[in-house]
Image (cartoon, helix red, strand yellow):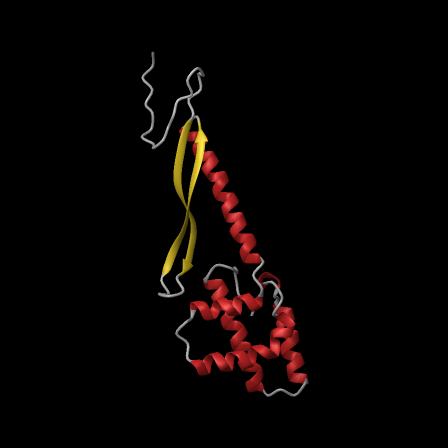
Length: 171
């Protein structure tokens, strides 16, 4: 009879009366990093996953499938984030901003909010933004006002890139 080494795993069980050994595996999967809103430090996102498999190899495959599902769900959540929601998240994360900065940002945001506020962050394009800024110029807005609106949008989108909600800033 071969000497079978069973892995040191909590909660494994053998199905009596069957030839197949079923093991329960538990693993903490890393799903990337995010910025802690209070400290600004990068924190790892993890999820504990349980699978049942007959071997380490089968368990590894099941863990990889679970990780891909979790990452896919995370990407879908990120993709559905609107610019209005991004703006709110910006102020949650950057909670030490001065009241004057927030007031100024809100005044500038009101100018572009009707155009991109309800758009998903992944759907905001350079062309949309460029068209908006050109339209502001045609309406007679000063270069300073256009620049201030540009800066507000740019910093929201930069944060989305920093948080890995976007691959790159469209501006």
